[in-house]
Amino acid sequence: MKASDKPPEQPFEAVLGDLENLVESLEKGDIPLEDSVRLYEQGVGLVRQANLRLARFEERIEKLNSSGELEPFVPDDDEDDDDGDSDP
Image (cartoon, rainbow, N blue to C red; front, top):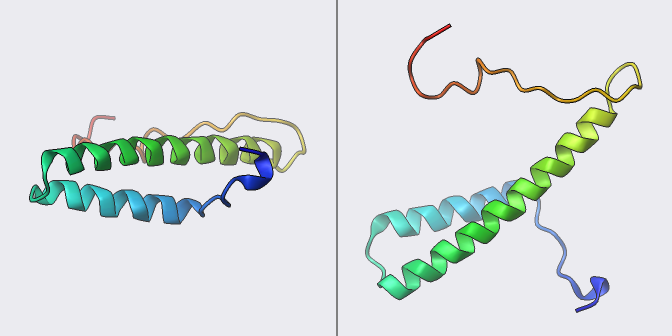
C-alpha cells in the first residue's frame, strides 16, 4: 500500500471515542467470545494509534516553548494521581 493509499487519520478525539465505545461493548459482556477477542484486538490498535498521536503532540509542544529553545515536557505528577490517596 502506497502512502497516498492510506486512509486519512482520525482526529485524536475520534480515536478516543471509538475506544470508549469499544470498551462499553466489551463491558456489557453480551457478545460472543470470538467477537470480544476481535474487539479487543481493535482496541489494542486504537490504543497504539492514540499513543503515537500523543507522542507527536508532545514533540510539537517541546518545540513550541516561549523562549524558542527545546525543552522537554514534564507532566505534573499531582494531576496524574488518580489512585485516590492524598500522599504529598
